[in-house]
Length: 234
Image (cartoon, rainbow, N blue to C red; front, side, top):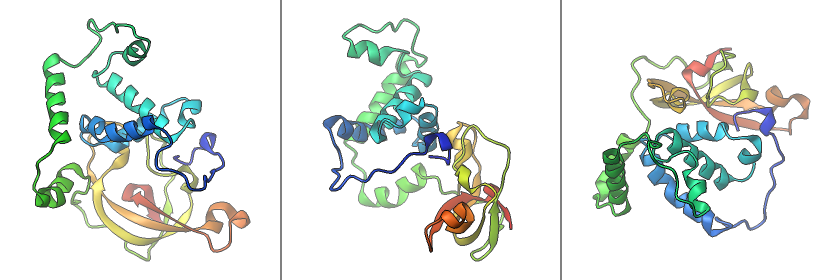
């Protein structure tokens, strides 16, 4: 949860936990890819929307976070009017006059795209080789990677951003690059809706004692994927 202390809580393990506890959780999971389709598959934008939720909503449950964030994203993008969902749940006709920012034509096109994805007819080779390149975030970088496996690095304490995939508890901590994962679109920029260039992405291993001191469990190691701009030589 971004290493933000206000979200710290005990992780409760549920024995024999089902995939879905209720039907509405299954429905939220089902609509997720179609909502994200409207935002070009930008899962970082979903993560950023979840971070904006009040604490009680954020901690209310996994799919509850998704649902609240999706609604907020659709309102901000003009696909829903403010208060439209609550009005429909209450059996009231929502006030839509001039409330939606999207034109009827844009809404109609979006609806057709979603219907097409419900019954896609892509050949297997397209799904396996083409779609990941179109919808994924891996992109070649212009510069050579700055770090290599085995390099000692430190997580930079750069200026705070509105959104970042860099966990807060890693700032200033030393680690060792364990793998170079190629290059990808910079997640921090994508989450904020800004133009995102590609950066090299690394898996960095952290010793538990460097993170939590002597309170760490023995032989604990944490591995985190971090972008090049998150790191500096140790």
